[in-house]
Length: 225
Image (cartoon, rainbow, N blue to C red; front, side, top):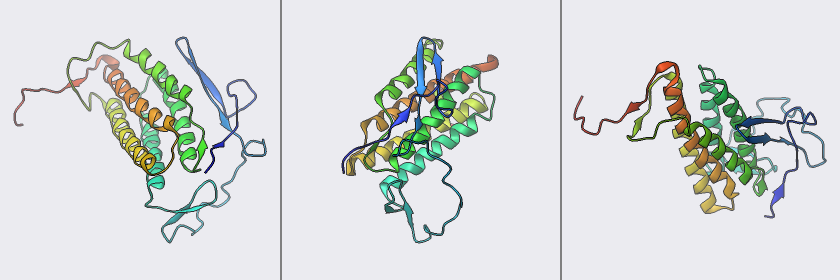
């Protein structure tokens, strides 16, 4: 199937009310808004929530085709949705504004990523977005002490939720890798999920240290309860 490019307007300039940009240090990260094939913004499509069309174990993709709900593609889409949901749960907790801004942008990227998965042959996520995650990661990591021991999930509620989002992101990455072994998939999807899990790890480290807290390190010599 030939690759489909989905044109998007530049965000953050007032042209597109749903696009935006944010700055992390010297790096300006832009998120764009999808446009429909006829050049106009995609309007409200959900006039009815239930359709009964999925009662036989199939669902519709963005290109109009039908596919089994147990397929690799639907599994990958579901995992991406799940990591996005855990990030949403994390954002209900006490998260510093610098991390909150990045996580909100990531939620929109993940929605785009899931949208790309829903249209076989589409390409929305780009390498520049992977590099944007790396820039955010480097900025947070620079303020943390060197990692000398393995970290256990925990520290405080926000840090533990961030670790949960990280593990779900790893699972989403594995599902997309499995899909890529069977079908042609944009390589940037795997790269994005891989960097995101790394970013969530360093965010969890930073969150554990908020308000005078500390990380929970693995005790390699501990035996028994």
